[in-house]
Length: 293
Image (cartoon, rainbow, N blue to C red; front, side):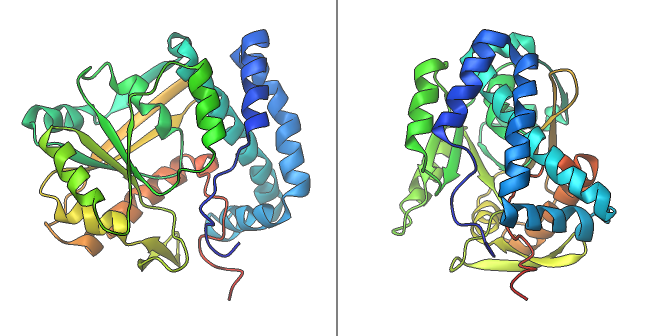
């Protein structure tokens, strides 16, 4: 587990349990079920526990006792975001409240009609952004650039019980044909969304200090975003208390084609977010390769 293996947490049966609980009990009572799920993860996912404990104890500086508690709470919080995502996509958006921080940057971006790049991370609940951004402009289109198309059964199941997502996928291909898709989307004033915090072995990467220790970041998102002549905005959708979400948008102030400068700005911004929301980074792998050393 020294690097991300290309698979995300979650299973089809898990989603079915969430949907059943939401329909029969409601959103808040469904959170209670998560204590049992989080307990299972905490007791049996030894490798994941180890790297998550390292994040809390070694990188954020929590005591060993608090770090162990935070590992459990991280699983619980992750489950909450899955329940929220399922509920919102199933038509329960009005049960939630939300606020925007830096939303004018996105308004300006869309008004310029040149498209833009959103860089996010595996924190919070970015996958529900489309349901909140629809209040901003009902004509906007998000294109998610990804290599992660596993778990088709989960996506098909969610589509069968939820409102259809408007997000389009641009799949990264070896022949680089995805570059043409990106340019076409931008020419239509659409948004390209990437994540910059998952590195896979064998993929071009950059090493950069993160939370006081060097870590590998995928080079692709920063190479692509820095070469497109459109604004780049860091966007995160973070869970708050009482079914409330907070969307953050910060424009990257870096020079054109300065991919490493963009990475540095991203790392700084992501550090700030994690210190504010330490439980909401759901990157359950050995990000710092601390167990390979």
